[in-house]
Amino acid sequence: MIILAIETSCDETAISLVEAKGGLSCPQFKIIRHIVSSQVKLHAPFGGVVPMLAKREHQKNLPLVLKQAVKEKDIAGIDLIATTVGPGLEPALWEGINFAKDLGKAWGIPVLGVNHLEGHIYSNWIQKDCHSRAGGNPVPKLPAVCLIASGGHTILTYMPNLTSWKILGETLDDAVGECFDKVARMLELPYPGGPQIEIQAKKGDSAAINFPQPMLHSKNYDFSYSGLKTAVLYYLRDHKRANKSNVAASFQSAAFTPLVSKALRAAKEYKAKSILLCGGVASSRALRNLLRREAKKANLTFHAPGLKLNTDNASMIAAAAYINHLKKSPKKLPLKANGNLSV
Ligand code: KG4
Ligand code: ZN
Image (cartoon, rainbow, N blue to C red; front, top):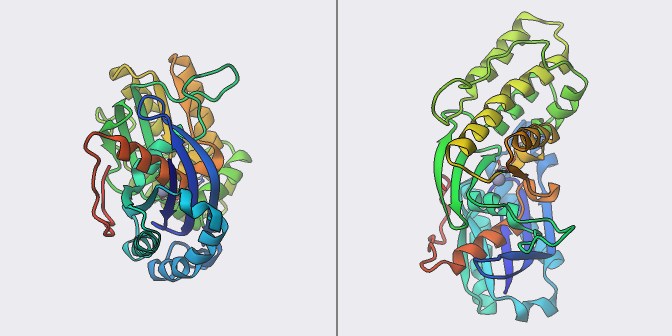
């Protein structure tokens, strides 16, 4: 089936056209068009996303992005319209939802609400090959442990099969990506901070400063990032001539250690075959390399989506819509913005 998906939960206006087939036993997703219009430059001067500004930009961009993603000849082939209903910024979410509803009405196509976090999870199945032919990019082996790490969420889940999961732990305060953005601001690096910290960190020594590794030794699978953020703040207050690269490298290492350690511990406890990483922070080469290395040592396969699928996009929303649509009793999320929707 052909799915037109819309994503406007934060600061990317995204529309994708995706061909989905294979059913639940072998879901396959081929991206026909994948358009993302980022508002990063617009929000950068404010050091973060301004919800009402995001809403206005989505409103302006949606028709333009649609024109790029869907040609006149494509319309008759579309079977389903999928739109993110949460979690995210409600004013921004409403723009995508209303746009999807209008398209559905005009074209006579059903509209399905999608959970943004499910989109991140299933981003690991896009452009993968379930038949694992030689040279192909294989789908993740299940059961798996999946770490969702983004600007809004830090959640460790256990996935016994393709359609179910359980939350093992999550952040008790700031999300890991949010912490990167805040620390970047302290270091006077531009928004979004994650990629900037990674660039700085490459030039620094990760053992230079002993920042706390939040909840590393706690027995549960939860995370916490506000203490680490404060530790960096105090360090910078007390060391006016701090070496930025060393701060970035030491911070990055302290932030990632608990993620890697708990993902590995969960995989062992739950006898998972693979570890999946997704969400904007999965763009970090440092984190991907760390997790890949540790997974290999533990005889687990490691998966992270291709780069354009880590940060917010609509192809992942199409993938989640397809899987949900195939379930015996699909989740019927109301077509209403739900900023706090959970996985
Ligand atoms: O998934 P995403 O695009 O949006 C949300 O749903 O939040 O994630 C964006 C987050 C931002 O906080 C950004 O700083 C972080 O992902 N990020 C990174 C890196 N690239 C993006 N964090 C650490 N290292 C990176 N290389
Ligand atoms: Zn996201």
